[in-house]
Image (cartoon, rainbow, N blue to C red):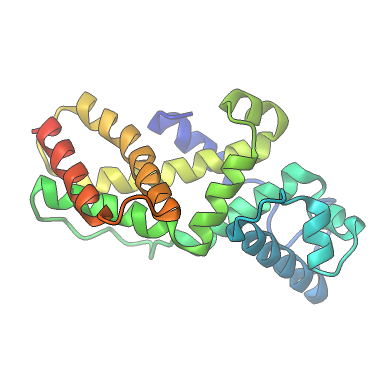
Length: 224
């Protein structure tokens, strides 16, 4: 689901899923139920973001939140429902629009690419960014397997990909660029920045600012 049209359809399907005010069975959650749901999602995101060597499981989340596995099932149904809710919560926390048009952009291609790289770089260091990365690493590596085993989670992740497609299109709007090359850069850039971000964790390179600027310059040269 990497093409804009496919991702947009996945986004529409994702937004039509069970509202956060309902249990997995479709019953309306009362105030206590909503508080329990929020606590479970907070715990899940914090545990994923912590990057512990022990895998994050539904049982570990339930234990940390001081609830039973039955409560997790009531709230989310199964593991796919839990991860769906986690990705949805991450989306809610990290992506907001005021409903109005975004302001027109100015600036050179290199400046816009630096802005795109910096936005991904900074997001990967947030709690939500670390949690989403950890969840993607925990899920099967092949997209087809994620879709088969966790279909609703796959739809939510496709919606997150749509966020990037939409944001990158905004950053590049108004520039006369080869659409095929632009597509290639859009696909490459998040993976490249994640690679640089891994150096931040390993500590092998101390000049990551230079690396990010060089990446922007290289991509600018490719697109020009």
